[in-house]
Image (cartoon, helix red, strand yellow):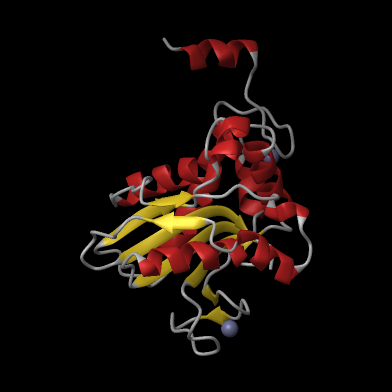
Length: 228
Ligand SMILES: [Zn+2]
Ligand SMILES: [Zn+2]
C-alpha cells in the first residue's frame, strides 16, 4: 500500500476539466476524447502544416515543429495551467500521453533520436520546484525507449516570462542567447526537443540554434499545445 492509495481515499480523484469522479488519473476519457488532435508537423516560422515533413516555405528555420493540439482547447489549457501554475505534477501524465499519441502517428524515423526537455532558469526552478517540460519529456522518452538527456541544454539567463510579453519581436529579443548546449554525442544528431506549450516559437528557435551550434543536425521541436 502506498501514499497514493490513502490520498485516493481522502481525496478521490476528479477530472480536472469537468469534475467527474475518477478511479485514477487527472483527466476523464470523455474530456480526453474532446481534445481535437493535430495530425501533421508544422513550419516553425509560419506554422504552415508540412504533411511531407519537408520545410518548403521557410527552409532556414532551425527546427520542424510538432504540436499535439491547440492551446485554445479547454482541456489542454486547463492541464497545462494546473501543471505550471498550480504545481500539479500529475497533470504531466495526460499531457505526455497526448503528445505520445500525436507523435506516434507522424512518419518520423525515431532511430538515433535523443529526447531533450526545454530547460527553465534556476530562478523558475526554485519557484516551481520542477521543470514541467522535463516531466513530460521523461515519460515520452521512456515510452519510446529513447535516451532522455536532461543535462545537454541549459537556460543560462533568467528573463521576464515569455507569457508576459505580447509583442512577437520583443519575445525574440527577450529570449536571445538564453540557452547553452553541451556537445551532442548522438552520432545521428537527431533531437526531439520537448516543451509544454509554444506561442511565438521564439524559445524553440533560440534553443534549436544552441543545439545546432553544439552539433545537432535534425531537430523536431515538440509541444503538447501550440498557440500560434
Ligand atoms: Zn472530464
Ligand atoms: Zn513557413
